[in-house]
Every structure is written in structure tokens, then in C-alpha cells.
Amino acid sequence: MKSLKMGAAIALSLAMAGTVGAQEKVLNLYSARHYQTDEALYANFTKQTGIKINRIEAGENELLERIKNEGANSPADVFLTVDAARLAKADDLNLFATINSKVLDSRIPAHMKTKDWYAFSTRARVIVYNKSTVAPADIQTYEDVANAKLKGKVCVRSGSHPYNLSLGAALLEHVGEKKTEDWAKGLVANFARDPKGGDTDQIRAVAAGECGVTIANSYYLARLMRSEKPEDKKVMESVGVVWPNQKTTGAHVNISGGGVLKNAPNKEAAVKFLEYLASDQAQVYFADGNNEWPVVLNVKINNPALEALGKFKADTLNVGALAKNQAAVQKIYDRAGWK
Image (cartoon, rainbow, N blue to C red):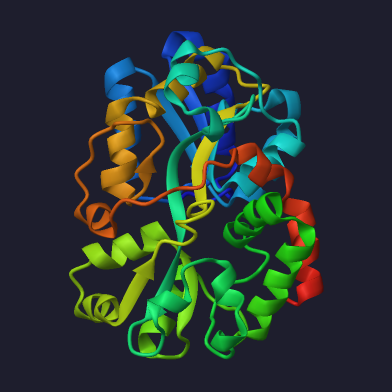
């Protein structure tokens, strides 16, 4: 991963790329996606278009701070990241340009875009349970995980993490503030331990019996399912998966996405890049390479782990609603003691 501490040389090269972009056909990409499989995704874009990608990868907060500080002179054309919460932060900073693209308008479903940014892949937040200690009938909804019968059996990552904030944002939209706060308080009361680690750590803790239930992003499960490591195979033998809320709103779905930046020096290349991300070929890279689902309908994929997870009803709440509720949900979690 390239860090933001790349020094003046790279900053200068990006600035020069922005200045002479028309001749050199370049795209300056600031990305908070850190997946090795994206290398093929970007290489294919260059092969198809002849547009070279200059890429800086770092955490989304670092990148947003950099774009903000660079101001009108920023060489950045496109910002990519994961989770609606993080895209909302960029939107709040007024960093995105509104673009017109018939390709994006026709291919990206209405609930998977706002006026300034687009989703290109999705991941679902599923319930993972220990087969020996928890009955799947008891955890059919997110609300069930807050039921007192699971006291001492729940482990989750931090309540301040965008994945959990977005889940809470969806609940807030569907059931209102009081029920969302009651849910958060019930969840905290059921903790087996204080929140720590990432989603994969929670899944391993469930398999080890440290807790009985967690909520995790689907692509972490798919990674474990595709792993050849004996320890990962053992984890998957011990856990089961429930698609939540299948009789009501559907499983909460979050996204990976991005937009064209307001001060982009290579706007035409930036729009072409986003349109490429919505192509069938790029959508397959997201699915087969990083275990995410395409946002474009009817794209054929070949990922045995995603196929094994099966079909499910997904929540069709607009990603903009997930974005707007972030601050309110953080306050709810703070009051509930979910740190």
C-alpha cells in the first residue's frame, strides 16, 4: 500500500500529470480501497482506454484531508472508498462534482447512487453464529441479536466503525430513533466482551466459542470460505450464517463507490473511469476478485463462495439515506455505550 508520506516527488508528478493530462491521457485516483485484486481492474482500464492511472492509496480520512488541503490545485480526479458513511463525509466537505452520464444513469440502480456519487459493488451485513451454542431460529433479524436471551453471547467491532454506523443508519430509517436506541442498548447488554478487532476477528471469536453471535460483512466470510488454510476451514466448519430480516426489510447492504472530484483536472477521463467501473467486465472483477456483489443487474459472475452463500433479499434503502443518518446514529451508539 502506498502511503500519503510519498514525498514531494510523487506530489509533483501528479500535479504535472494533471497539467498535461490531455496529452498524456492520465487519471489521478485517490483510493481508500486496499485490495490486491483491484490491480487487474485498473490495468484493464488502461488497456482499454490508454489512460494511465496515477494512484495514491491511504486511509479515507487521510485522503479527504489531503484533498481538502490541496483545494483548487488538487490533482485528484476520482475518490474511491468503501461504505456510504465515508462517501457521505466527502460529500459533506463538498468535494464531489455533479456529472452527467447516460451510462451511469442507465446501469447503476436508483437506490445505489446519489446526485454526486455512485456505488459500484455491494457487501451485506450478515449474522454469523456458533453452530454448537446458538440456534439459527433465535437470530433471524438484526433485532434478535439484541434479545436478552443472547446475554453474554454477542461480539462485535466498534460502534464507531462505518460498517456499524451504516447498519444503524438503516435501522434508524426503518424503525425510528427510539427503537434503534433500544436495539443498541440491548446489543451492548449482550456483549461477551468489549468491542475489538475487525469483522474477521469477530468470526474467529464465534468459531472459538469466545462468543456465540456476531454481525459481519459478507465478503469476510467469503474470503474464509475460499481460503485453503486449515485454520480457516476449521472456522467455517464451526459457524453458520443467517441472512437477516428476510421477511421484512431485507439484509442491510453497504457499498464500495466513488465520484468525480470538483477540482478534477481530467474530468473526461474521470467520467470514463466511473463508466468503466459500471461495465460488465469491471463488475465481474469486483465479484470474483474481492467477493463483492455487482451493483449492475444481471451480471454473470463465477465466485463459488458467493454462490454458496446463496440468494437473499437485500434492503433497497437508498445509499443517500445511509449517508444522512450517520451523525444521529453515532449519538445513539454513544448513549447506548457502544464504544
